[in-house]
Length: 242
Image (cartoon, rainbow, N blue to C red; front, side, top):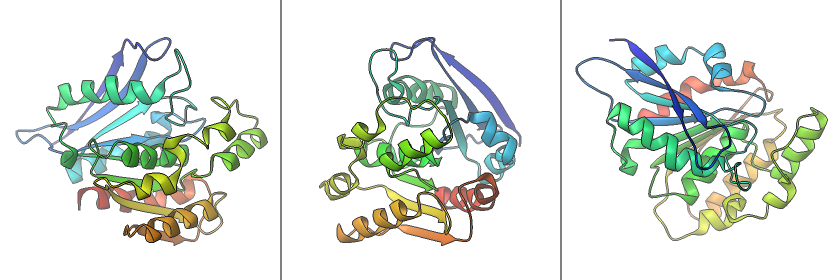
């Protein structure tokens, strides 16, 4: 078996200039039944993940199709005309990936995960769109948008919009999302003990427990960097197919 790398380029009614993603698709007579949408962090791209982790090997070994969207510093939210990354992902990229892979849109066959900004996106998408995803993982999730705004300023990165105001949106209010009377995805969170967002991840776990939701969680030595993500992404991928 091998893995085909398919570049998806779609015209977009939600994003200026169109949208692009990489789709890793294990080949062979038996096609994969499960699709993971893996979301990159701020100031990164799908290539950042591919250059820092042997995702092709993991895709082949786990027989897992992986969609890697390129959606900039969007936090996987909709910000206004021509800047609606969330809608583009859900309504353009995911349908295109399913067309190529033949994987069902049924939630049981779909998972979402992410790193840092992508961790926020994964949890927000899975909890606000429970009919689409049965599982979500977050590595070093940037779960506090006000703190994320501070980090953007420290790193001199242009934010996608007013992150402090975005923290008040329904798709960013963890307690409200967790307490909704809807089917919940399986959740897995991991972060380093010296991570910038350590307290935000701990708070998420506490809120989930208060709502009666079991979450697999792991806090181990590490910072908010690729040294930590290289050591933790493999376990998250294994969890996705377990």
